Length: 411
Image (tube, rainbow, N blue to C red; front, side):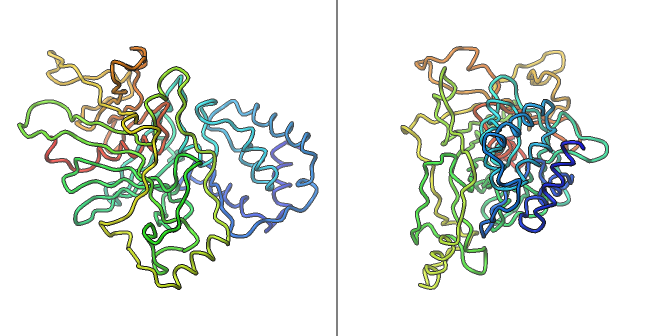
């Protein structure tokens, strides 16, 4: 009997005791997220059966061997199956599976909010659907012919009177802020020249979620009261105005409020969240009691939303990214950048981001010239996105989404 068959029998033996087996089936579907959903259960699951009572030493050895056998990426189905057996198996899997910075692989949903690898970029592509105003981030070099692309994140464009929102989700059919699959959003100003990236959770595990009436931003008719109602401002993006209508590509700067500039120095570390926050029935009960006290309700669409900024060690120490200056090609009569074959169609949306650091900082020149994020067009409604440390997949995707918004003042 194969190892996969044993895992299948173990998962089926729990029956209705766990919903994680169902999520693994959804994970295999092309219209769901490639990353295994990290299910948050409202009630704790009691472990029963012989598989949940394996000795910790034996369980650790089994999952470590399974992890080492997964040499091909994104073939992570066996590792996810082990984590779906029961709670103890899942906790051991989380301890063994390394972050994308260390192994270069994406396994659990939290991997999309962790910094990418340092050595080589993660190569992805974005598919734009004009009819539904959706954007899908998929893993791989190019789209597959059978449409079995490995979906990572999906965004939907929502136009408002004074701004534009891009709601980001783990799945392609649920963008509700009340869903466990909600990741964050990107919001622009009226001109589409300034953007703010909001994360549904703090990138640092040390952040404290306050329960004050000033930060409550939901009503009982809008979202489930047991879910968080916080938006953490983790980055800002600004495009320079082209008032004189001069020739040249767009100029942009991205300030990563949650990433210190020291992260690109030797020995530097970028914030790496380890798991999504867990919400128990105590949080739900306290929220319901607060709602019964008739606190003022602020809708999600209100321009006066209270957001929680992510604290940085020192003001001004945030990492700033700038677009790499292209060179003018006399023969082609256009601006050119070396995308190393990843971009094939000329577009005003194409860009490469590098670190903008102060000369006084002790950062090598090769580190300053390293492309942290590149984005470009390869076909009709198909774009490539390659990111690396210290950006995460969510942060890189949000920066690329800002390029899709209309910018008449920057052209």
